[in-house]
Length: 298
Image 1 (spheres, rainbow, N blue to C red):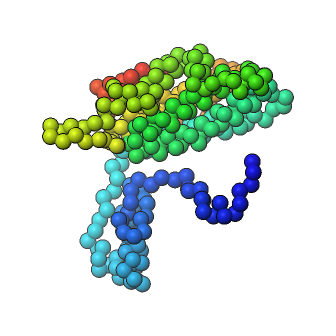
Image 2: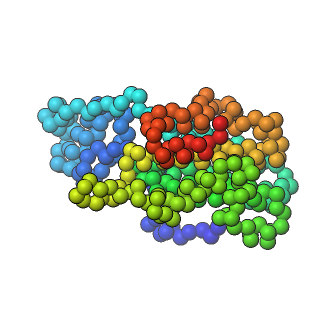
Image 3: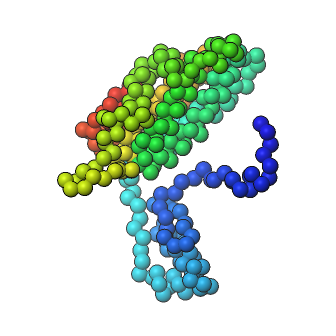
């Protein structure tokens, strides 16, 4: 890859791979925090920010005289979304680490090399999809998940190819049938995502909200967040199936013996389907959740 000039890196720096849940204040300098930060830490950060903006050198003075009566509410201790997202991130990272380890072999066919490097994007792409999910942005999360599924499908399709021209001519969008051999519901998953990504009527009508007088457009919601996280579980399940296929093909532990990726050490003890079942308990009559949950392997 061509080296970038220093001025490009200076003017277009990469942002940190970290999303915060709340803004501490709405002042000139916004400070991001998570809901589970201790109340006292929130208060101290608020005092520091306000003292700077007010030109007051004493943080303690401002905290004592202006914030003494303020108490930030601690987060709900049983919040479900954070451990679920941590599970998805942890499992995606585990897949990435196993795949990197598996690539340490000689004389691999071209198809294997290109496919494995493609699948390596899963961990990074999934983290960005979860950013959209965490914000309750369903349609944006769908777009990223659809891209991930196309990459997984293309990798499976070309895995045993050795001819460069044949690999170049293979189209990701037409590779879903290859993925269906490993993940039976892949076609239905792709169809559901395509409806939402292509703004089909039955998919986009859900974004409109009418209160009897005014028509509104819903960008994000808690319901969208549940659907996004369920979709993320489906895509994780699919990625596990693809990694199991790759590892079995090359005789790499543990899939060489027929074990599932979820059985490898370092897991949380809960499977994708178990997490999906727990998620269903929050809205068991939601049509999208029911549909997405039905795609996951038992």
